[in-house]
Length: 55
Image 1 (tube, one colour):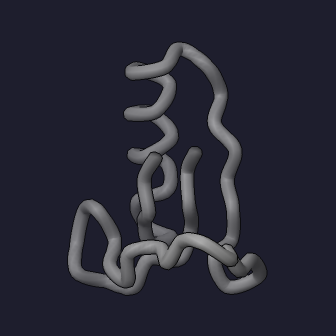
Image 2: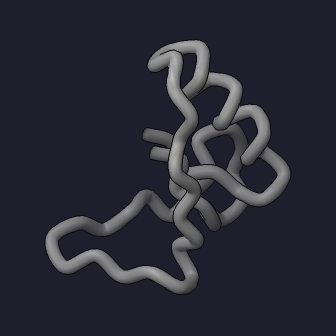
């Protein structure tokens, strides 16, 4: 699972596929709220705001 900015979505997809050998789901964090979990505020690859969850 990776929280990334728009610029790093492709990198996160590649990492996910390498690790799990399956296609991930991409969740837009601006359109989705989680009742029991707060996603990290920053991208896993840089310091920009996290915009997508790759899971």
